[in-house]
Amino acid sequence: MILNKKLVKVVFVIQLAFLPCSILGQNKIVDTSIHKLVQEQTNLIFDSLVKIRRDLHMYPELAEQEKRTSKTIALYLKSLGLEVHTHIGGYGVVGILRTNKKGKRIAWRTDIDALESNHPDVVNFLSKNKGLRHICGHDVHTTIALGMAKVLTSLKDSLTGTVYFIFQPAEENWVGAKAMIDDGLLNFIDPEEIYALHIAPMSEGIISTKSRNPYADYKGIEITLKNTEEKDTLINYTKELLLNLQNIAADSKFWDNRNLLDPNIGLGSPNTIFKDYVTVNPKITVKETGNEISIKAYLSAEKDTQLELTLRQIKEKFQNSEYATQYIDSKFYYETALVLNDEKLTSATLSAISDIYGNENVLPLYGAIPDGRGDDFAFFQREIPGVYFLLGASDFEKGIVSMPHSPSFGVDENCIKSGVNFFSSMILERLKY
Ligand SMILES: [Zn+2]
Ligand SMILES: [Zn+2]
Image (tube, rainbow, N blue to C red; front, side, top):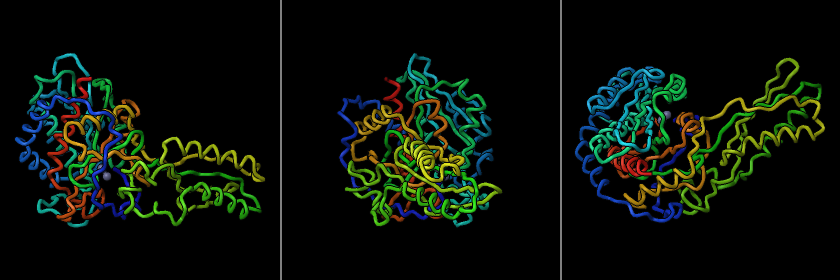
């Protein structure tokens, strides 16, 4: 997960209220016997998974340098008897579970890289790689995926179809997903659906997401104008035009991050205030280059289609203004890798997990989380329909807060168990349809 710098300051630690899951649709009757087996298998391997997580945590590796991590992954997958492919798009690894029975093809993607951090670790299994730490939870993501591979392999005789486990390097710099695809990943696997998770600062065991984009679309816009003697009025006009695109009042509760999880106006409420918004970062930069003026600003929007529309509106406003002849161009020069969940799959998977593990574990989002978060899982979603889940890993009573990229990032390791259970069961249910 990449965060806009200012997000690191976000205090996102309020314990979630359990909310009714009306978005989940009608309850289907799920055969729970196979899911009981999932939970038994997960319980059996849980201690060994914690050991793996702690080992990965002690040897974090930066994006594009995940040599040891990928070796650990490949060895584990081989020990399960899976077909294993290594060195895909760098240190990418893929494990393929073939049931040799006709059925669906489902992919689970996990990211494996760590980050630079000189802050001391909050656990006693300290990083042995100086200046590097797993503070985005990818050690936990990797462990959950390995656990899922083991649990689903143990149930292979009951499954149909194929499950692909994709271990992607270099998420933090948004290189790895593209690199794996460019390296021919989709020539030897052909998933019909793809899923992933990210640790999030909700209570341990809560999963959350929404159809389309769970994170706001975040783009940098650049407007290029002809430089003239009357440039000051032109610059002021442009700044005002940009600032007026924002539809959130300065005194709105929107700006207080504590409201993100408020039961009435937060992301989990149908009446959320974190919906239909456009924001404009007031730090607008102006640069004169020769005969041209470049004006740049960051915009964000809840709807994934909104900012393209906004760009067209800017163009039209200029063309209909007294500055029409000075207007040259406007374009996006920066954008996040926008996670875009398939609507039907989001609803189906949240329903399945809710039916098996209970509504109290599932928090559908009605609005998008503001600011510039993204995940290059987005590049897989452009090829294959899929869903990106957030998995809570905080234990507020113990002071464990799983806020990605924060120096004190920590996880309640029970989230490994929750993750393996929820998403092994979810894949089992998807293989049926
Ligand atoms: Zn990250
Ligand atoms: Zn991350």
